Image 1 (cartoon, rainbow, N blue to C red):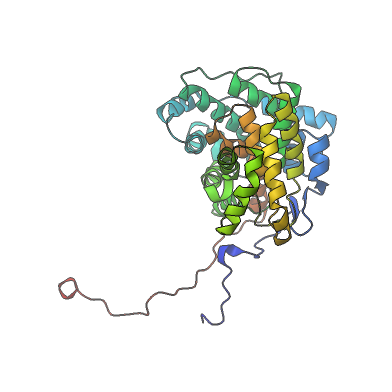
Image 2: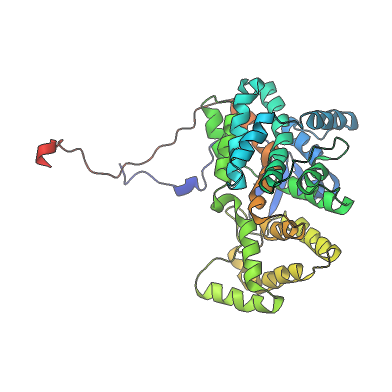
Length: 377
């Protein structure tokens, strides 16, 4: 049988379901949400609009957006027990604390146990609002500060920066955070979204699926690229060192962080928007060297673009967080903040025509053999 079975390790190239949410053309380097180009959404929309689009399938009218935003703002609450749990785990990695808190919400909020599409939407809206609150509360508590209360007058992205830093962000900084969340909101059947679907396939609730997704995103092979890019930038030090760094990496057959993607063979279409943001923010902050180092690496990697080693979205994300003074271990939680609506709609789609996801593994162990009693081993 093993001679007739084709194994696609990592399920590479395997279609397991249909989806009407995002379309990725890896060869062309294009991405759409519900048929809308990521370039149009990143340029013209807000995160709240994109979250509505992902969940409901259409861009909202002004009235629909206002109502949706009101629901998000109303959901900016956490049970006091969550602050106690964060305090008890404050020395843990922020992704572990976030995952633990989301899992605890399932036990603290009775509505989290409900299943069905309307329940998933309601719980999804609540989690979209609560995840950034958890991340910001942990950052405050582990530094001996009282968590900052949410501001109902601020947008989702601006409120996140307010809760994190305790100061109102500039319009430019809030918009850049907004674009960051839009670009990370959804990306097909990536590892964390697939893991969430597997959980929903067992008829589990949404909180269980999001907990699974968070655990999966925490793995460095999925969510850790932005953090690794900042380590690389620090190692390079100056733009003049970039070419030698890249040459040494390639000579040793080592990957250059932030280049290449499991799906894209052309440049990640999300990267251009983060590139523009880094350039503007680095100039605003008076630290242009961060952008200059990144661009020097891009230039040094140009000869390898024909092999599919093009820049991806996370190449620029880390520098944006660095310029905001955000600790490196919060980079993956920020990814999670943006991705929640994508996970929610993936779970809803899975539930609509649910089936237990149960692939096969081809056995290659010993043939059946006799049992040996203990005294004869």
